[in-house]
Image 1 (cartoon, rainbow, N blue to C red):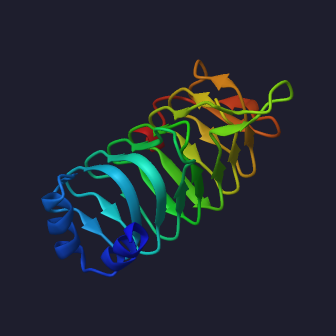
Image 2 (image 1 turned 45 degrees about the vertical axis):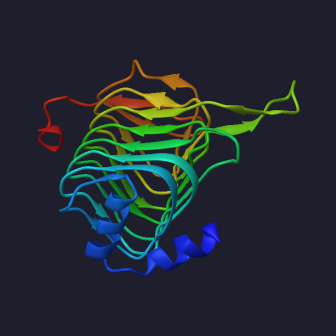
Image 3 (image 1 turned 180 degrees about the horizontal axis):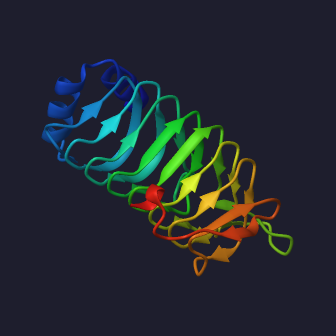
Length: 203
């Protein structure tokens, strides 16, 4: 029954969908846009002038938070694992483009003005270790003003500082939150070169 309700809601026009979500107790701005998408989310917080495009699928998320003027374009997949408090947070004026995959079980936090660009990048927040059979969970944290290219793979526990470019096909692992104003490329992703923090892109 729960799944049927989400499917039914998916095909409502945006204004009606927003009205219903507000009646259900979600914090959804009246001037946001929500396209035809599947919203299996316990707690929604959507700020002013946010946009969620058609074809996005959200399954078993505990919380989705979109800061003002952020947007999720089309055909992205957001999933979690049963029994965990999963979360996806998108900062102010940040954007997710097309056909990306987000495993939100351990939490994914994307900073202001970031762009998850291109298509088919994957973000994983849970896995199994060599010395244990149970799943472990680690959040992914991407600092403000980062640009993430197509086909990037982020492993559980990845983090980065501000004003970085993450190149096509990079495999991102580990704690890199001290790195800013850099081009990160390769497998595993490492600093290729530094960039000026006052360049026009970051202005």
